[in-house]
Length: 114
Length: 115
Image 1 (cartoon, rainbow over the protein chains, first blue to last red):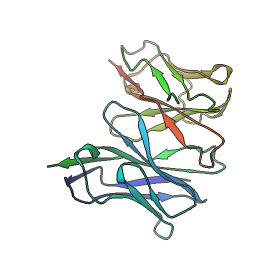
Image 2: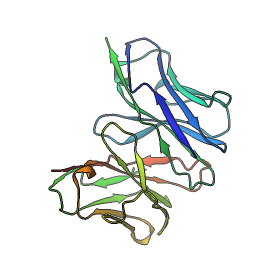
Image 3: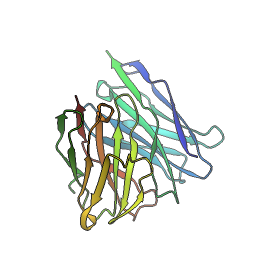
Image 4: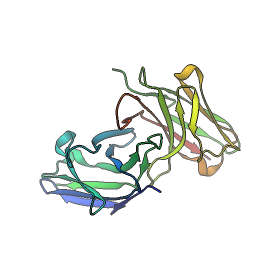
C-alpha cells in the first residue's frame, strides 16, 4: 500500500534561510511524487512533480526536490526563504495503474520570521 | 484557461441538516475528484469519477454522502444528514488523461461548519 510521511508538522525558519521540508513515501510500484502548497482559505497549488524523469525536479517559486529511491524520500528545499513562502505544504504520492489517486501526507506548516 | 470552480465557498449548517456542494472542472478534464480535508490533516479522497462513471468511492461514507457527475462535466457532492465530524474543507480537483502523471488541479474548496 502507498503512504506518505511528512516529518515535522511545523517548521520555522528565518527569512533568507534554507527551507527543508521532509517527505518519505512507501510504494510497492514506481511512484509519481508531488509537492503542493496551500495558502490560507485557498485550494492546493502544485509546486513540482516527479514522474520518473530527472531525479532533481525544479518547481515554481524557487523550490526544488530530489527523488532518492534508496532513501524513499522526496524532500523539498529552497535556498532562501521569503516571507511569502509561509503556508502549508503537502507531499503526495500516486502511481500508474491506481487510477492515479493521490495519497497525501499530513502536511507541514512553514512559518517564516524576519 | 479557467480553473476548477466550486460553490459555495463557505457553509454553516446544523447537524442532521443536508448540504450540497457544486464543482465545475477544467474544460476537457475527464477525471474529477472530491477530497475531504479535516483541519490539521492532508486531503483524503472521497470519490473519483472518470467521465460519468465512479472509479473509486472506497472512502465515501455512503450512508450519508452521495455524489454524481452529470454528462461527465459538473459534479455535486451531498451530505444528508450532516454530523459534527463532517466539518471540513471539501476540495474538488480535476485532471486530464493526456498527461502521464494525471496531474490534479484543485479548486478553492468549500469550508463546511456543522454546529
